Image 1 (cartoon, rainbow, N blue to C red):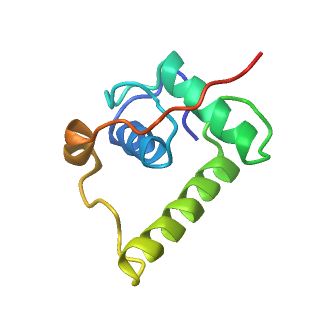
Image 2 (image 1 turned 180 degrees about the vertical axis):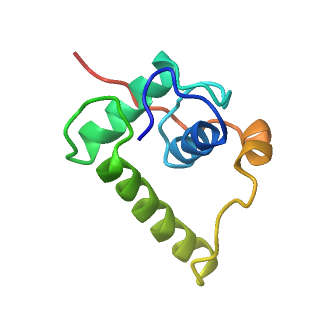
Length: 102
């Protein structure tokens, strides 16, 4: 489980994966800050997951389910999208972002 204040490579991977799915967590810093939390909340809202801003098991499973689907569509074989999330994250251009509407 990841939440605001968490840090490390797991957070970097989460940030990269959110970016791949079109949810802008800000910089891939490896620090679970307010922008990462907001991106997780938007992801949860759009995927029918209870909104907490915490990357719990349900949220993580849905992220990977969507990434696998993207990978299969892109490569035809389901191969992994990124072997080193931090390195890829540094080069990646952000996708169009979603925002929470009031």
